[in-house]
Image (cartoon, rainbow, N blue to C red; front, side):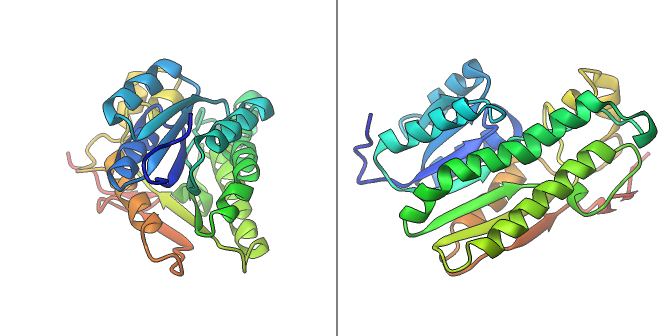
Length: 257
């Protein structure tokens, strides 16, 4: 199962079956990485890896499962090449309920995926990243990580916790050869994020971006991930906040009528 491509460096991308994750997997393969694309949906991963070609490996993985994440780490080890990049992209939002009516089930899911999922994968792969001598962890957060908004309590809380995890990790491993990067996008229009948030309600999902000229797209974030990951290794981009020009702040969005 090992790679025979002059020890091509490995990049692991979670949540790679769609959106930012899939775009990032494509972009990193183009940058010379062998991409391990991890996500729950095996059929989507198979299509992606077929598109990318020999520079990608699909691993069906549920980041809320200890066993599944351990299997991911095992597959990476079997490839026999240095793991130099982890992109913690898997995450998501559910619902837009006020705190007073917040769904415990939705809040639990958001914490499990955004926070504990990031923790599981980071713990499992950090030894290999350190052993490479030039590791990088990129975590895709959100502007919700530092700006609350009405109806976003569960997602805001989860993303605040995720950014606290990232910042703490950076402090704890200083002096080791692993960079810790956080990328916090604002409005990114993808096929599934808002659709999943609103349980498949296309009208509500589309309304999020109604009138917004050129919201960010998945390729924009993939471009930024590639930029951060390919800087000289002594350069650490602690946090990069990115919004479309139409979004001045979480609550300030220009919509054309």
